Amino acid sequence: MTMVARQEQSPEIGSFAFHGDTVTVVTNEQGSWAVLGQLCQNLALDPNGQRQTIERKAWSEGKTCVMHVMLPGQSRAYPQFLVHERILPMWLANVTTSRIADEVKRKKVERAQVELADALYRYVTGEVQRVTPAPAPREITAAAGPVSYRDQAEILAILRPALPEPYATATAKVILARAMGERPELDSSETPLYAATFLAEKGHKAKTVAKFQSGFGARVSNAFFKRHGRRPEKIAGPAGSRIDKVAVYTEDDRPLLEEVYAGMADLIAAFEHGDQIALSA
Image (cartoon, rainbow, N blue to C red; front, side):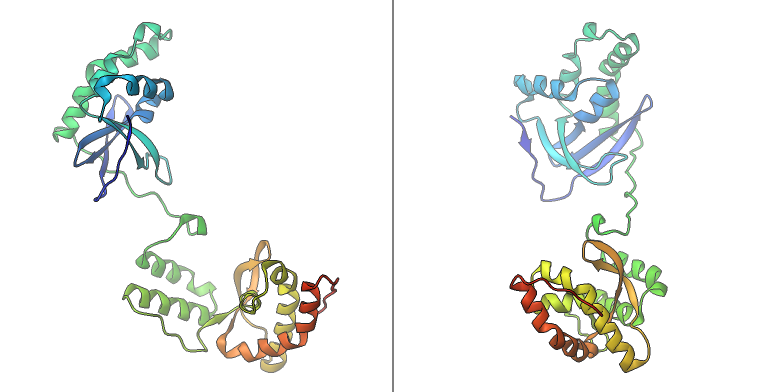
């Protein structure tokens, strides 16, 4: 039976070199574990077949598990089938090398059968230098997932010259407050406001927001220009199904958006009731 490992503490993940290949080792309170998929890749063996063979053996009971591990060259952790250090020699001994036609591959497996268990033992006992994998480079994208507050502050510092000042100031205050465990408090002149967000706050569905975002935004921009003599600043942001430059307003501008919205409310209502609507700025 294969266990799904549950850890109260994060396991230690390191590796050592074995004849030009990397062997990743996961260590927790139950001992040290090797990643079967990686070992099979190193030895040109079928990982699924080897896993099935191991799980059929009585000596594997309680000595295998599945754990999320990030291997070298990967950008995130994936579930990996692990074998305990105590059964690694048994697994290797049960690999029938006479069935491996390729002489180079056969000799590589035979060398692992003789030396790999001892190399793992030397790693576990500290007789060989452990290699701790360096953190994977983080891309500044939504796909990278949440980042620490320190990283957020560093990203903001890098991008600040390209951001509108109200947006940069508000973001910095939010990061600081959250890092300190406090609730962010922003002045109305610092709180960003976007046309799409404004429409969504009115309770309109995504289809309506996508339909009217551009036309509504153009009318707000024109009204802003008439009032302030300049266009609103823009940053990259979602515009329907694409990323484009979108205008950034603040809560101080909300009355202006409300005025423009009041002039379009009937059009929006008609669209939501199924009428065909043509927009102009």
